[in-house]
Image 1 (cartoon, rainbow over the protein chains, first blue to last red):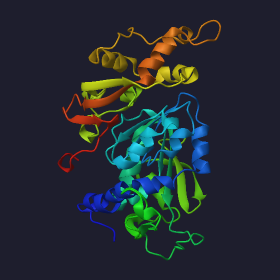
Image 2 (cartoon, each protein chain N blue to C red):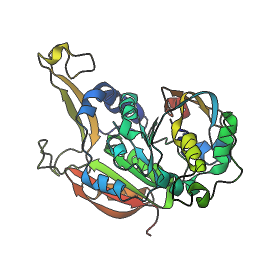
Image 3 (cartoon, chains in turn green, red):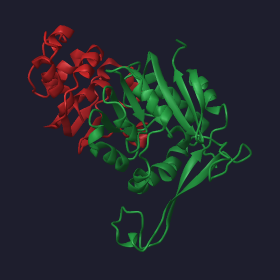
Image 4 (spheres, each protein chain N blue to C red):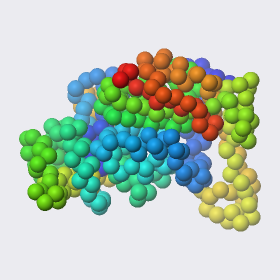
Length: 239
Length: 131
């Protein structure tokens, strides 16, 4: 299911961007609690630090630390509008941008987070390019925290293991119900029927994210596994 | 989008990023609004050395806002002897954190591409032929 370089942008438009725009309201309603490692990364930054949240979705990390400034970006206009309206996000900013064409000056930022984004790119080259683009925005001593979905998640309801296919379509189900059938068009149901949307994912194998960082010219400073995800703290240099 | 954001944005095109003309982006036909927010003196004080003051000053000129001094204020100018934030700090807060672009265009000084701002959100998605 991996795509060719030429077809990748169109493929991702159809199987990632369009889907998130359609499921934005429901997706956002399920995304509230910050994950602990990410929350800690943001909380321990010094006051006045300036950074990026690349693929911010509904902006759930924009309420963690009000002493820093985050320019958050996403491909989904509908998710951004949700992120921009929340009052606790007010110390920060949201812009519409693509991870492969970030509108930020190079060598400028103290930190970046990129959570559950890179696994939506459909070729190895584009995934490495995304990591390279994020690292380029950092000051020499800046740090980026990147999270991707793991292939090895035998403990989750999806049950994938290291033997499974890495490029998959993952369903997003909006349950229909009699009660919700009268809800508005953005609501979780449409005439009481279940609606299923499929999103493209590249599921990362152990070690693969670290290899992407190295291929992008970066340095792995820390890495690990948390709740079905591989994560890495990367920089442009060792110290 | 608060004006501080413009200090951290440039053209999304890779060929422009390397050029000095692409930063900062220029504001055209911009509508501004004030979005009230509690001042955060610690943030302003720590962030200020990171600000490209010249770019900020140019921006206020383009927008017809009150002129900024040639140099960024020193730390002493931000905090009074009583530890309270000064007028200088409060003015910076109003300018950087509360003054926001609602609509208009952000223009790259190198390629002239215009990025639209609508409902306070700037869009940096490029048409496929420009990527």
